Amino acid sequence: MQIDAMSHAGVQRSLRQCLSNAAFLLYQQGHVLETITIPFRGLDSRALRHLRDSSPEWRACQRVLESSEAAIYNEHGRFVLSTMGRELLFDMFGEGAADCA
Image (tube, rainbow, N blue to C red; front, top):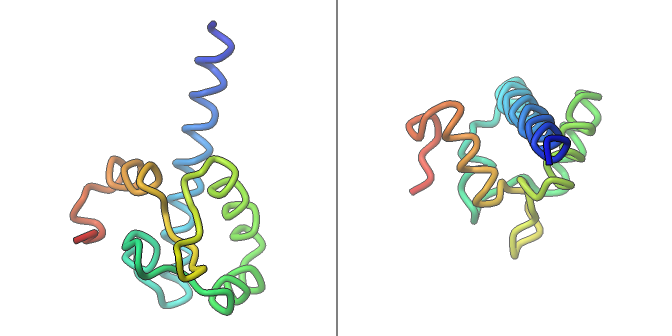
């Protein structure tokens, strides 16, 4: 039971680190948090490719976000945060950090 709690804490820490890195990397490339927090927006394949090419950290971060289901692809095939990913991001930065309305 304690191993599961420790594992969960490690995943949470990793997710939080990835969300923080993602916010920074998005900003560096001229994006805003709303790019990935608003479900109908998201990053298209060209933007994702540019992020991966510009930053080796993005690839690892994207992998963690996808495998933890904190990020998904919306109905338009764009990379966005899932409900859980948005809740965690807003828990970290406050809901005012990105308007999800």
